[in-house]
Length: 274
Ligand code: ZN
Image 1 (cartoon, rainbow, N blue to C red):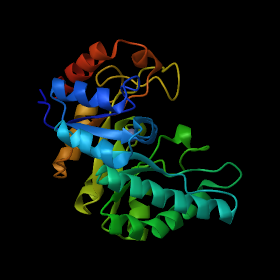
Image 2 (image 1 turned 120 degrees about the vertical axis):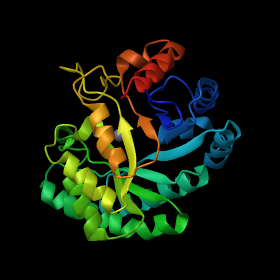
Image 3 (image 1 turned 180 degrees about the vertical axis):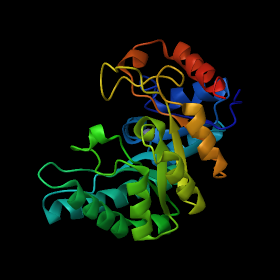
Image 4 (image 1 turned 30 degrees about the vertical axis):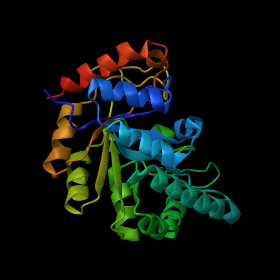
């Protein structure tokens, strides 16, 4: 059984709710962490600083800002633009009071994944000082290889660890999401390495349904699918990780539900983790 003290929910998980409604509903349910998506922050209307203050007044921690990255492009001008865009996103995170920006690193059709990873490393290296100066960390989130076409050339914890080694900055680390990395036979080892190097910055949970109907928007609640979420969570905790456990679910099915009922289901699924 898990108590709720480490439960965080991503704003996109309960997408039909705006940030104000999410804050009230989460606080009432005893959820004290939120990771804020850019689109939700933009819809809030009063700016990032005010959104951050609103959460703090509800007793809710802003755990991360989602998401930066997309460093790759065929042309140098596109890559420069991405660096500027990431600096802007880091500034938004700082205004929000979010200690971390999650990076979906990017991949560009027409160039190899090796080239994309080189560009990602260079792009991160060009933004990490800006992040550090703003007091914001960057978390590389490896994405499942089914997204290697156009979303991310970083598909394993091993690749993420390698980029962290190359950039070598205390503000650069990894966001581990069970949905993306559960299949990897090196997972336990790479989580351990990330922990030893103090770079396991955040942990996302959900489940991979057996035969999902949609490769993006049919994620399951923990326990609904094939991922050993409790087992991976144990490896994460064994590193000394003490951060929030973030429920991040994109689901046409759940977004169509009554969101109060859905929040109850999220909490039940979270409590059922061993
Ligand atoms: Zn994630």
